Image 1: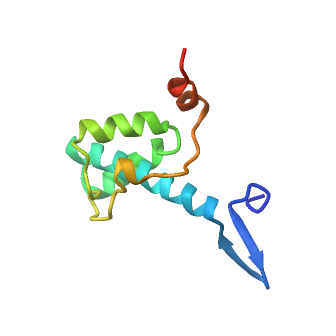
Image 2: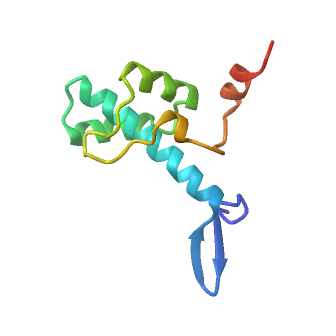
Length: 106
């Protein structure tokens, strides 16, 4: 299934993330880490922030993540000290339907 989506490649019995898979993983990590930061700033411990972020990180759109990032003054690391990719460093990512509609001219 992942191979069919272009997220992984298989060669000689090994499975690796494709370029698209790497971008998708990077986007997921960004969503998760921005959400963790939001919850951390609300007073949750790093562990609690991680748990709360896992509940929503796949459900929020790229646009919402960008808005949260702006509201949190563009954090550079999550509560665990892991780096958060800068807004302008994201490239080639996929957009969900809501994001595409928001970016389309009327």
